[in-house]
Image (cartoon, rainbow, N blue to C red):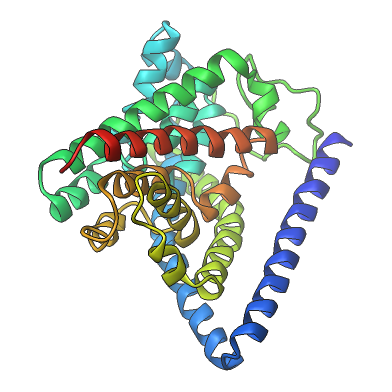
Length: 349
């Protein structure tokens, strides 16, 4: 019963977002006097651009998730995970080196790792840090800015924000209170949520012993397919929202506000959330802001955007309860905002 209520609330939320966005788009269209056919073409192009850019990484994440489901046992997680909660969360912050996925692909990986016994705080730290602290994104940032304060600052701020957020979850949230019932019900030992009904539980084949390679790969591909389509619906909705906001919100207005040490940080945080650019390529977009925006605002764009944007927020709802998703947005937003303002007031590069 509880699971049905959550599904209904999430559907109502999505419907409400669509309705508000539709009214906003209609108002913007009437106010601007632009040709509706032109706006539809722009929206379609941007929607497909965001979606096509993100789908390969979602697929990579889903395949990784399937391989974890087949070949990783709860004992493996327990053996590798440090017993100290701070060290465990720090370990989660650096896990992106071993799982090179962006913000689209990291969500199904985190969900699968939770079902293998990964602690809540470690999953949160990994979720926020992996889109930046992974070989692909580090290479793209180096290609755009070279080795220097931007690359070092991006890694340092991301690691600090992910670690702090993970530690806050470790002391202030319980697994079954933060995760959706269908995910929490599958968590070994700590899972078992009484709130989950049979309809909520994702059908996964239990793996007691490590399977043979052939059987394991077949199971991995089955699990990956389920994860891809399950997370894909959130990606499609988030991509549509991002494309609509790019189409109907005049970005020139946002850019004009980006000169002050405080306001510029807020503007680029908002821009990063709205345009939802994949973390593997966002460094090249940030490079175009140099000379127009403050250094702190560019750093906030490069750290907050990969952690939280429209499409990733929608995907978070497939793993976490709405209250936990709210904290996953607000805490990184505040921490990267403070970091960006501090850079503007104290450093120049």
